[in-house]
Length: 572
Ligand code: ATP
Ligand code: MG
Image 1 (cartoon, helix red, strand yellow):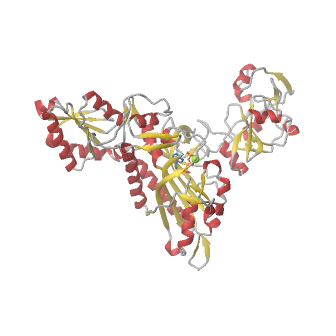
Image 2: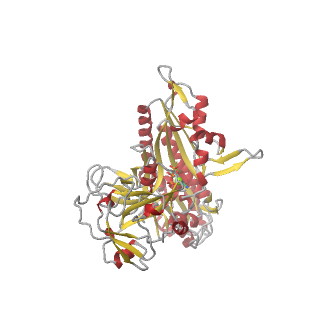
Image 3: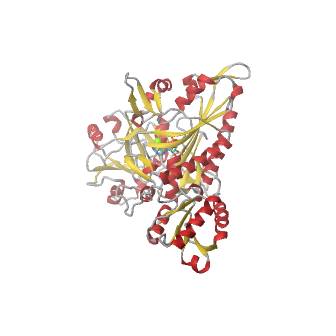
């Protein structure tokens, strides 16, 4: 391929709207363009990266026994009514009507469609296990589409669904996918970690997420430096590991704390440690008021709260809702709360041991001091409701956990019979008995993986693609395309590279070398091959490696073999 035939609209300026480094670089390098919030065009170079990721995914899905099909994006509401998800999916679902007024959605995921297909076509355990997958667009009207391809409203996903006759079968399929995912992300040249993930009400070891390690990631994960434990921080269990000794309770007193609205303000105003503050967070959970108490220096783990309450939606109460309750924002607390309003109070287990604490007095400008559990307030339930932090003990071996940020690129999940029961997807077992098929689902965000790769590998000049997913592995150019001799060598070398099967782009533009070099660095081809003065004087070609900056010189005859060998050694 030649640059003069391509369409690579690079940008010199950093686009103002780009909110993440991958977003900036993918725009600047001419790989994507925004059409609307969370909706992007993949330009030719970006499309090549996506195709390469897809090919790696396809190869590994097939190796694991997966079979590809293609399900429709436009999905009838009836199927979603069968599982009850039409009503619970919420505003993330793009909904539409046809000319007859019938309801449809743009598929945010495909469990309903695949389970329906299975229920119509598969009858016997003899046809199992069955692993069906597709690579297709997904539509989710995300609350906050952002970071370019990272959190889009239209994006490409690979989704595979496994069907087994029993739990043992599911365990085998799940492990196959776990291994396949590990291979996919290794082959994409990414540093990643598989972590235990929240599996909602099902719980247990039923779900893993694959996280690309990046400081800019939206997800936080904990891992153990000693054993192999790793989990999404949403899932990491916390236990109380402080003293069991009870402090003598002081006298409850109202204390003026003007303007001190945050935990830090209150602690510094009263000259206390934030660990002595009892923090009260007000939530609307499926429309009901829930207050969660945690120690002042802790964060509420909203996923744990949702799971405990077996609820679907949780939102922090806003100032207006607090006003309606007559509770001034920043001065909320549990003392006397139940007398004022119907509320469920959940206490993180640490707060059960938090004596003589400071808590909001539900009165503007005031806090209570010497607040004690049991005496001054009651909770409905004590449990694990906080976010784990660095140094918390590993749930497997007790060593201090480490915390890291990551980008979730893949998610695997044991579904069991949730969808098959709802949709009548049954099989006849060995005894001729009818039973629901056991399912798993397994997703990889293809476009998010592309963004994650950039987020993990770039420098001040641009992207540094892993070889296996680079838009082209090699860019070739003459320092001066107008010099017939240099251009002739470049043309000859291009022919040889193509014949050797090298994935090469020939930058045949009549541009200054500085411009071409800048573009090459920005786009991030792993190898840059330049025909320059050394060709005329010594017959040598310059080869520069994008990741190490290393430069080597090779003869015309050696170049292709050297590149092939080095590039293939760089693909893991
Ligand atoms: P998140 O927690 O990031 O919203 P999710 O749990 O909704 O992700 P899944 O439904 O498990 O995601 O989807 C499988 C994969 O699809 C994810 O691991 C991720 O790689 C990708 N993905 C999900 N939502 C988006 C999105 N809005 N844009 C791009 N990729 C996405
Ligand atoms: Mg989501």
